[in-house]
Image 1 (cartoon, rainbow, N blue to C red):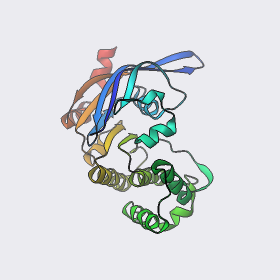
Image 2: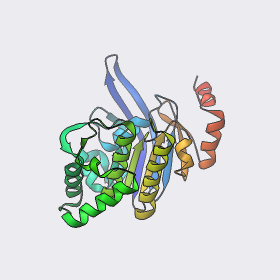
Image 3: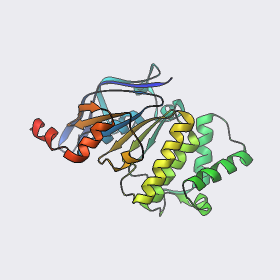
Image 4: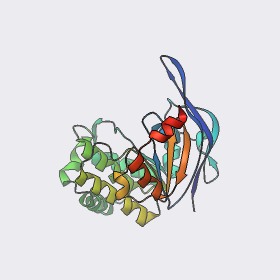
Length: 252
């Protein structure tokens, strides 16, 4: 069983006002097959955690470690992290003009697996995955995220997740901007990947509504760059009733 382990992680970024310290000593362990929800108010460091794991160059690791099956993730390039089995579904997926969804997916699959997938088998696999996500077949010929609605962008992220079959997925506010129908479809895709491959999930969200469809094994509350509280799914239910006020009052 694979394990993603984060120990005493401290991360900062450079701003116009100088260095801003965001993560201030985060500890988190995710085993393959587990679903962890990370919740908290705006600015608490949730997305910083996601992008640091993925290797975004803007985020400077000042201390601590991230290991994946004993390997030092911080020594890996972004593409090495992806090939090792880490996947990030972005909150704001970027457009890639001139690159079709079909070419993007096939190129990504080849890079991850080290060999090109069989054209006949791959075509059917992509078609079936798109059908499961209620995506029209014409979608494959469009340029990546160009002119996509918010819901289409998020479905495309989950399409990648299902096709690339990583060991761990970091989902950065995948629920943002989705209506109820799209939220259900996206959640079904995450649950399918989890059930079929034993995917480990780090699900970052402000709200509990996605947790009605994707049931977390563990919930972690982030406040001011630290884990303020941890628990099971019952903690998410309490947050729905109480919000984050008590954490913010305690911080003040």
